[in-house]
Length: 254
Image (cartoon, rainbow, N blue to C red; front, top):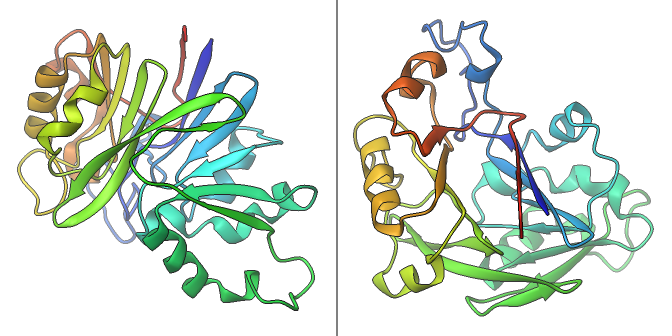
């Protein structure tokens, strides 16, 4: 079995946005409160997260998570990596394995240099950085297939694990990468808002990708407050497509 928990389903500003009084930002429906996007994956006896943003600490506390084995990073933007300092409590015994492309690892070394000094200040996180490419790799026997995505002009990664794929922050998918996305049971893909955006898919673009990839079920994530109230927008989707929300759990066969 594979268990997926949506730790956050919001865009870089989160929902509610600071200072906003719109219907979504003032909604009392918990599905309209979105922390920065991150996914917890439990499979094959290991537990890891995809992306580690500024809400990491609260996400761990809210879901009562006491252990993670690894972190996969899609790209270097702040809302996807800025929680790494808070990994310290998970890292003291064996260090925390962090998998990302080399340019992302370079950005991490630059942003938190105190973690990598020869003489470290006591208490900093112990991060074991592992460079990856678009080639498949394994974490304790579980195969991870990176998928090249384009975040406008920035090359980033999505990940396929078993029959699930997590694709966030994309605007386009190179044609040669679709072969990695065949026969999915679950596709998780970004949908920032209704309408278009320079570097993120809108809902209509996400629906077009879902039609092309043809998963059995699809979940939309990385949404802004302008996407609308969850209770209303959910009604207009096809039966096999859903808006995800924080805390949602999906159990699926490997």
